Structure formats: C-alpha cells, structure tokens
Image (tube, rainbow, N blue to C red; front, top):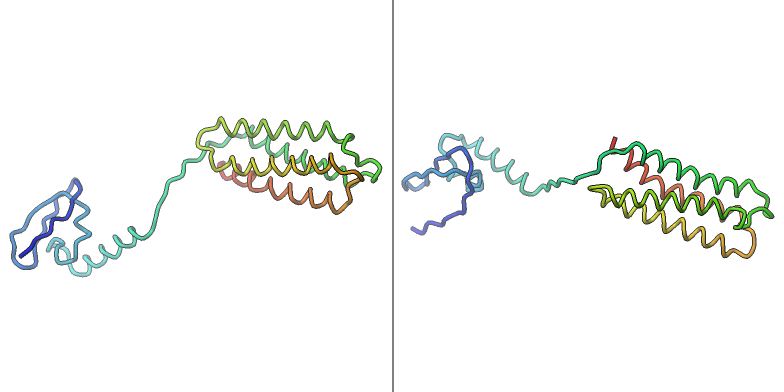
Length: 187
C-alpha cells in the first residue's frame, strides 16, 4: 500500500489519526490535519462533527480575509479638508452670483491661489501620514480637477456661463465628498 505524506504544520494540541484500513495510529501537532478526508480524522469526532469541520474549513479557504492598516483620525486635518472644500465651493457660488462682467479670472486669482495652497498643504500632510496610501489618489484627483478648472477659467476668453460654473461646482463637490467620507470614517 502506498502512503502519501502530507506536510503538517506545528499546532499546540496533539491530534491522533487512525488509518481506516487498520494501519497503526500516529500523533502529530497540526491544524492541517483537518484538511484530510473524514476517515483520517480522530475517531473521537462523530461523522457529523467531521463534516461540520470540513465545511467550515473549506468555507474559510474559499473566503478571503485581509487586513488594511488605516491612519489615525486627525481632527485638525479633517477640519482643514472641510474648510478647503467650503472655500472651493464658495468661489463657484460667488461666480454664480456675480454679473457676467465680474467673472474674470483676475478677480478670483488670489482665491484660486489660496485654495490651491490649501490643497497642497493637505496633500503634504497626507504624504507624511503613516498608512495613508488609500487617501492619496483621492486627493490627487481633487488637485488635478481643481487645476483643470482653474486653467479653464484662466484661459476663457469670455465670461464663464452659469452652466459651466454649475458643472465646476458639482464636479468639485463630488470629488471632495469621498475624501470627507473616508476621513470621517476614521473617527
């Protein structure tokens, strides 16, 4: 009879196995033994118990678990994100309320620069923060979108239309939202 050896890991409790065809029993320290067919499991287990163990074991094998390290909650950083998002929204609200003659980029350049500086500051804080790799792409998307809209406003030869401003406002709100939700989830 050919006997196959199965690799066995060390486990603190000994488990005795009996071969179904009257071979001598042997003891090992292993949870891997639960991978063997029910006939190789200890005789002290009932058939129902053996099946339950196997079902649970295969359930664990086919379901995956992962551990993701997340950064600690930082109240000042959260407040800075809220403030910057509000300032970003405010610039578009002011543009919507302004007459078309008062929508030139030059009138909003300092405010754009202030918002860009705040976004850069948040980005640097995120880079320095441990376990923060999931947050960086969100902030990079915000930064890219903000710079795109800023450049479009700067290069616009005529005044921005209500529709363009509304699009800018809606998109920037939608880009800030995941960052705020993610940061708030750390509480």
